[in-house]
Amino acid sequence: MRISILKLTTFGACALLTASVTRAQDPMPMPMPENAQHEHMNIQPIAPVYPRMGRAQEHPSSPLLTLEDAQRIAAESNPTLRQAAAEIRAAQARAKQAALYPNPTIGYSGDEIRGGSQGGGKQGFFVEQTIVTGGKLARAQDVASKEVRLAGIEAEEQKIRVESAVKIAYYRVLAAQEIVGFRRDLADIAKDYATTESQLRNSGQADETEVLDAELDAQRLRLSARMQENSLREAWSCLASVLGRSDLPLATVAGDLERDWPNLEEQQTADNIATQSPAVRIADTASARAIAEIARAKHEYIPDLQLRGGLEYNNEQLDTVPHAKGWEGIAGVGVQLPLFNRNQGNITAASANLDRAKLEQRRVALALRERAATAIEQYTNAKLTASVYRDELLPLAKKSYTLMVQKYGMMLAAYPRVIQYQRKLFELQTEYVQVLEGVWTSGTALTSYLLTDGLEAPARPGEMDLPMREMNLPLPDPDISSVGSMPRN
Image 1 (spheres, rainbow, N blue to C red):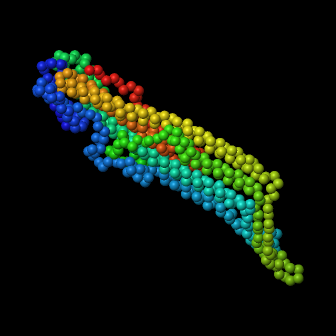
Image 2: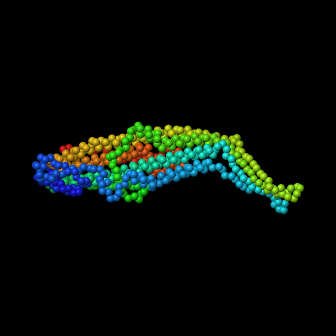
Image 3: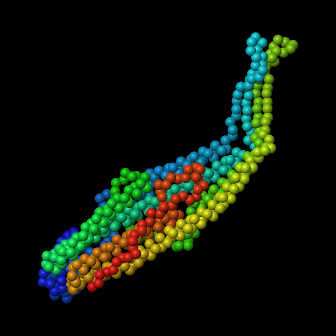
């Protein structure tokens, strides 16, 4: 919508400048004081234009993408979830294999075999079977069952990773989507200011340096708006990748950054992460597996029985009759004596692994608390800053801008001052959105046990007992240490 605005350049000036300014939202009319309307009937009042969230969602070019839609797509398309399911099937197959009995051996046997016309010797077949003793198969299956449990926890952890990664990427897109609109607004405001300075120069009330400075600033903000458009496309590409659908075209996401912030209590959050994280459960299960490994190692030295039986045809001639002795049975039983090797080395190694697994449980809890402390600090600072922006800075900037518009309507302020106050308001709104992104990013990471990488592959079989893997928190780091100073009246 284009708004024609009469600009008063100096107090009491006779010449009025007219400019056409494009605004990114519908104006909210503010009436001039009644006395000013009577005194300045020839001045058209201007309506203050305030920043407003959610404008991109009002007239989208395609259906809005909700967070629920994004999570559903990820559940169907993210490859790491399928990998985790495959690891469960593999672990279950290994557990089944561990309980299988050894296969029997069947073969040919021959003894004293002779050739020529006399023939002779023995020829036949045998069957050999190993009898596993000491409950070794049950112990091996117990160890394998712990690996099945590890694979299941790993799959649960991967599900949390994907869901949190989708949520973080989603809110990054939502924040970038909002910032694009405000960057464009700032570019329009700077353009308006440059136009005003140019008109002031034509009337002799501004010099060329002021005009050039305004034009330079307008170009810089136009560049910033274009760069933010690139940032939006990058954020969408990250979201599409986590969803497992890199072919998804850029779409508008639905959401409200200001509502339903993650509400976390510091100590309780740290305790939950340190005691309920999948990393803790993996460490506990790894310790249980180490105990099962000791039990298996202690039974490995018990010798198995080797049974052998069969039939052989003996071609040796009987002394009394001219016939061969015929079929004869064979049998054998063997056992290995554990004189030197009683598996003592493996038993000691398994005991050492158990000691390490118990220490790993403690290390994981401490490491999680350490990482949680950093994330909690980021979340607390972001939430505090967002609250100050929402409750103090933005209302103050809005009030100042509104009063300046009223003063302009009463011929008590120049129009460039109005633009300056409007720009400050939109700059604060942009910073506010950046802070909100940090609230959602850090809050989501904390509620997801700091598991945020939805494209990291699930652990391989030999890595199932590694409770903690790389945790990358894609937290924004906006420069909000200085919000600038408001121009004085």
